[in-house]
Length: 452
Image 1: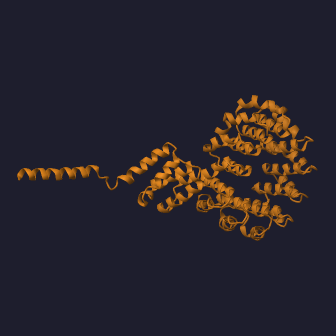
Image 2 (image 1 turned 120 degrees about the horizontal axis):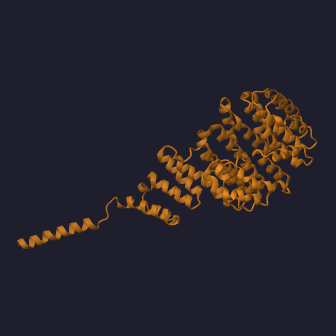
Image 3 (image 1 turned 180 degrees about the vertical axis):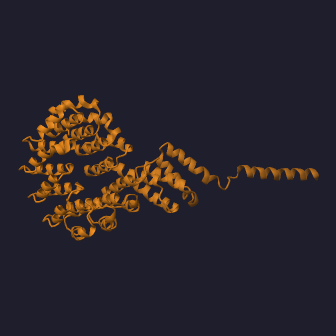
């Protein structure tokens, strides 16, 4: 009997040990599943990773690290809208934004449109990237240099031109051979921002380019690099009979020679060609003198609205001079678009909001979309004293029925509010329009803290 009892006890003990060894621990699945999903994510097997996420129970799937991984998985699948939905759940559980993850989501709303079939959408994406001013955008901008649209390639080139590392890019320099005038000009404008003499051999042949704008831009680079020939050519082009040559040269000249270009600007301000008068008006912004105010005041009464707009914008940039008086008079301009730009100029001058409040209200109810968009852009120049009333108006324009107006309002909101606009910009990521979402994503990139 003792032997039987011994063997029975041994069998019970063995069974107990067997159960302990083979039974799956209660918490094994939640702790091992994310690791398995991480491996799938690292292998870029995003679809399989997403399937594994679906197998997690509510408790495991709701942890912050799991949500972050799911957001990134959806981004890897080029699904920014799905990633945003998951990000919203993450932010709600954290009770605050995870700015690093939000930044990744915002970038994908822009990046996904760089391959869109619609030229306009690609243009929106590359506009957002060029306004970001961040070296992280360089790979995407370089990709834009291969786009089938010359306008889109020009936007990509402009973005690279704003970044030191972008200007050193081999693909950027190669774009000097691009067939589109705007692209070649954008590359040369980038060279003119730097002081790299190694580009001289690349630039000099373009002094013979068939397009006036390219020849002028090449001369500007050489002038910037202290090559006398380049500066002489700029002066020569600034008095040329060809309007395009003259217009481009005037804009380049004021950047290089400032007040020395005053006689050229005064002469151009009386030219019969509107584009030349407009270029002169733009140039006076770089010549902060009483003569500039006098001429710009005259140009505020030019027969053509684009010239009046250029004059208003320049007056807004002339600080320390009596520019408010002529601008206040121009608030009665017969053209609503001109009035919108006058409002922006007055805000840049620090004019009190109550002075422009009535014109702003009138313009925000204009039927013409371009006018509402113009006043939305104008409000982006509101300084600290005018910030609150400008924000109130922009909040209404962010909800305008037309995407173009919402886009302008989003950009201005980011300028006026900075990081305080994050909540509004996040909401705009949910907009029904692709271009609005991409613009909101680009605006978020500019206000969010950069990655460490």
